[in-house]
Image 1 (cartoon, rainbow, N blue to C red):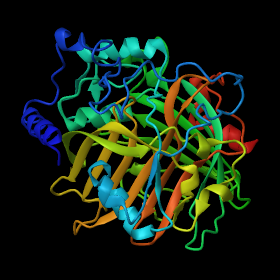
Image 2: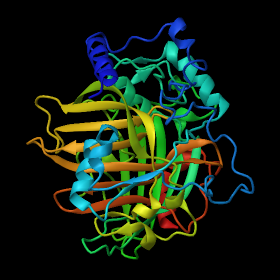
Image 3: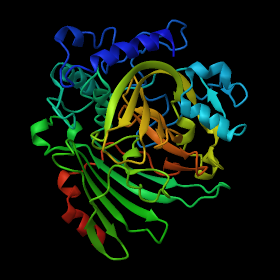
Image 4: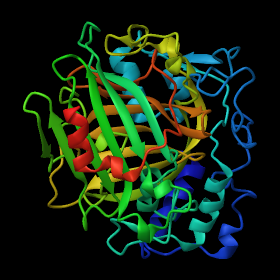
Length: 452
């Protein structure tokens, strides 16, 4: 642990003993857009210059890209600066997560980490930056920490004071107002063979809609409807989710339509440690989107910031000319298509609360300072052993400037298998303006759609 990281961790430990629901002063918020970016990152680069200053991110698409096209790589000439391997990882240990070190040991020499020039591409629309500044002086955690108030559109706490505020920044980060796309998930066998499950996704982000007020969104963050299109034995399965803000006061609502039974049923257990559907028991429901749901099962500790090699600008994994067979390898993703960069990340530790049951007793999350996206995480079992390692490979989308995942992978070090979600190659571009209406996401609407 470096001196700077240790100092920040000690300071944060003192701060977290204070009430969790205090907001920042106008003087602190005035830093946003100055020495801090509008979302709260350090605008300046690091001392060595290996992390550059943030200059607005990738707010404009590269030349030649047209709306409706899949995102192209804006840095096609970039080559790895170096490659971290099982043999040389000791040279880079200060900038590796424990999960990455474990992956290098478990899957080397085939698993390697190509490290590229750092490009701070995260960008969002101007309205998001405005709301971020407003949220800084208004947003508060509810007394029980299971919800927020006086916030809207984007992350509530651009200048966080504790781990709970940081994890809420991830949960409520801006991902657009609406989006529709098709992608596949897969659980490769030990030999690398796989059978993808293909879904159509439709999101309506009530919390992030222009002009929305917290009092008017009925405690909803977003509405999600998925429709399985392959394989044939699952085709026609519909899942509907109403993601709530305070899930203790009003739990997540979920329904599932099974084409075999032709019935739409409530799914009361689609939360926490429940196995994620179609993930072969390799991932829990609350690992979807790296972390989701009510944070009430854990005590959250902010450990400060570190400079780490993390997945970033994963345009090769998103490429329209790449196939899932190109991406998936025995044990892990194809390293030739991954990209790691040195970025500053917030580090948050989640420790299971006394009397609570969950398969993960401790978890560590690494969040991008420029977007509040969780980039990597580690999950430990009841004996304190590292069990699962997750990574989110992200890009800045061009249809609406938003930094979001294109692919997530969770590696089970015990089972020696992994789960991948977000294989969107060969499908149409993400549509960030599909024109959805909220009443299209009711149980009645899902039932009508299933019968068509």
